[in-house]
Image (tube, rainbow, N blue to C red; front, top):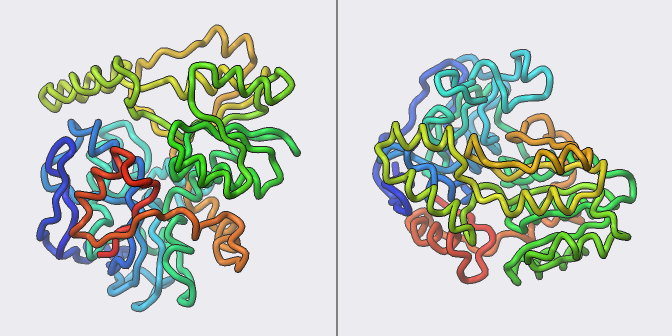
Length: 391
């Protein structure tokens, strides 16, 4: 089959790879009909090369049609249309029973000290082949896949795989008081959905992003926006009676744009042999922290900062004295996708499209065009906010 493979820093290519096969009785094979490019894929493309291997199949936001099931899979049949959550969870361990599927004890990557295995996301999370491919082997298919209807287009359902529940969890973790103000740092796909979810829940939402096209998209959904600047925390306070936002969702994460120090550290680490580079990532500060520090500055005293953006450095400096003085609550973590499925499925199927799932994709492309789409997305060219591949 054809699949998008990692070849090196800023280098991906479509290659012929072996077709996936049933390996365990709880497996299923899915023919992919849509597979999105996520901001987290750019971490592999740009930053996390030391954890990747040439030829790794990437992608973790897929959906498609079941073409084969293992003998222990009774909840799915050939021909079922399914969305595949990006984290692989068993549904029966202690962590899954607590609604912490991203910490599944059955699929934890214990040798790396990591949580549940993820599709297409480096040896940190199990080196499981991903879904930017024609077919995908789905472990624990007796629990993970989300069975959906056949009438609506893929775009209605596709984002249940990652970014929509990630945004939902980010807003829930933000714990905004009724009628309160939510600030969102970053208007990539997760930030777009977090902003819309906030509006859907009756909140005032102020979102911050330096890209005009992203701000314009958010404004279509009733979101107030600000350009990112060194004074943005002061601007947010001036819009909230001098206090700051009740809660802030940081939807940016480890990108190094506009941060020379973080960019240098990431580049320098990437030049080391893989094992040394991994040690650097795991013991040094390699993250761009301007969005996070702005969030901590802009939240009101006693407020909550919720991290949906992914950070990678273990020693990234935090303003702990200020955080303690302001009594800030901090919540974070990989999304527990299946925890939120029942909340979100009715919303994506609603004719009114209250979360605007049909107003996110800016580019649709074939699998063969994926390398060019990665470059465009990474460089924020041509108004690119969300790319969907059609294998």
